[in-house]
Length: 375
Image (cartoon, rainbow, N blue to C red; front, side, top):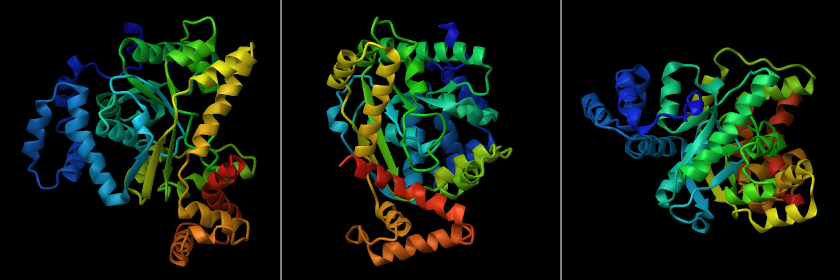
């Protein structure tokens, strides 16, 4: 198992030492003071020092941190579809990607509350460059997706990653979360990158890829936020793309986005669990012999599930109606909700900048456009 050492989270035998390394770190203090505002520092420090497994760390600390995040920055999390999953079974959750940390953490909160197997979760190594964040990620059962590699390094890295994911699912009975594409959706169009599926397929031990995907039990997941707390932070990249320019991130941009996503206002949040893919994989196998065509068809099946089950909020319908100068969805939102949304736009972007306005409206309207295609 040493070949996974560069990307894997901590083993439980390593947890206590890792915690002792960071228990006095100022960022740990900030996180614990936020989570347990009425506790003396020594109380949570003593609890941390007694922690010897990832599950204990997640259940006794991270779970409570996320409850606090939901309380302070949202109007609550709702879920649907979890009853389709079997207790004790591992699944490969492939989800749309809106927020760096919360997408996977909120899924784990819901899995925990439903008594289901929690996930090991993919995270780009560019997001955990700071030592503390790297340790926290590994304490929270994140494994690393290596970025910025040469094509040859990327091939080797993808092979290791796919083998590790297969190992977790088939030998450790550990569920896995992975985003449907690298990076968060910037324009509201949730679309599966076939490259992600190709990478997963590298770990196949079956002659036909669809048999392998059936074995590892793929579950599409739709997550939607009424307000995207990082919506305005996505605009510079959208503007660069509109001008055919290469977008270059600021030095601390990922970290600031991470913080904004956690603490920014979200209003309501919903997670829907799609059906475990099964007969769909048989149909793909029977229709296509070529593995590339199979991958394309599977990406479409995942997209169809994610888009169809995406929970649309008043903000989505408002943005659609503003963009299209229509009153088509007025029965789905109130005048007050519309004026709040417009006020938020005025506060967050320069109304004189048509590209920025169009970008942020598209971000909210595109899920409606996509769902109308599936009706």
